[in-house]
Image 1 (spheres, helix red, strand yellow):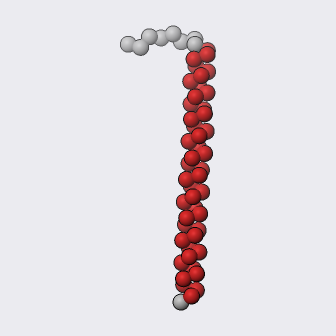
Image 2 (tube, helix red, strand yellow):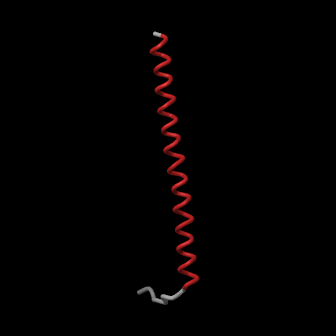
Image 3 (tube, helix red, strand yellow):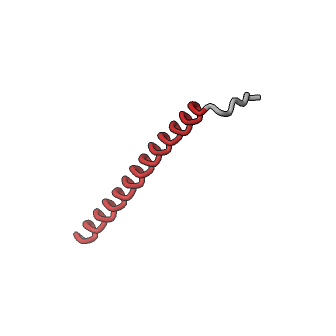
Length: 55
């Protein structure tokens, strides 16, 4: 009985560790994507080659 309880605690701990890692990875990817988007927008604004009007 004690081994089942310890096993369940270990499985729950591993599951929460994996969920935490996934959320941390997604957060890091979102930050990288935001920085890249701002960088591309700034590059486009500085370059300013296309002066198309919005129709």
